[in-house]
Length: 189
Image (cartoon, rainbow, N blue to C red; front, top):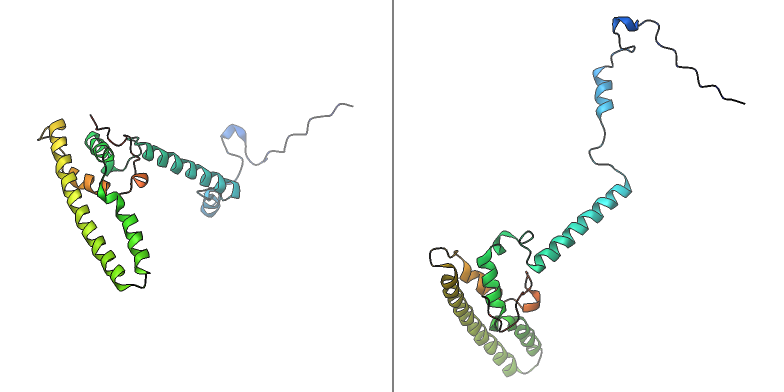
């Protein structure tokens, strides 16, 4: 048996289509505002989970890009060819500052030994080591500035390269960001 199509809905008889009427009453302002109101962000659990997953993926991509030294993901303090040169210069050598944290752990362990002489001399040795680290930082800063002037020219060298180099030199090599791109002993070009 064939189905018949549903009958069309009756039109408002009070409005004549030839006169251009819209066929319904104008909604009040309150009705219009209520119709426009909707949440700015979908309030569904799956939308929240999807947005959270997308943000996590973006953060992971940015973290990997920064670790790899990709210029797009580096913070402003790490961008530019001179900063890359300084990072490579510092990463290519050995620095006393890398051993500060392990030395402090040794001193903390030594303070648990109940012999006052061991505690005293471990603290004295730590302070002497810190003085050597400061000296190494100053020498690294001077050497980096000289190398940067030789490579980029004295008038084109950025300010703060020495401080940048000395701060990077006291970080333990595995914890540096961006990750070291050169091996020890391999001087940057």
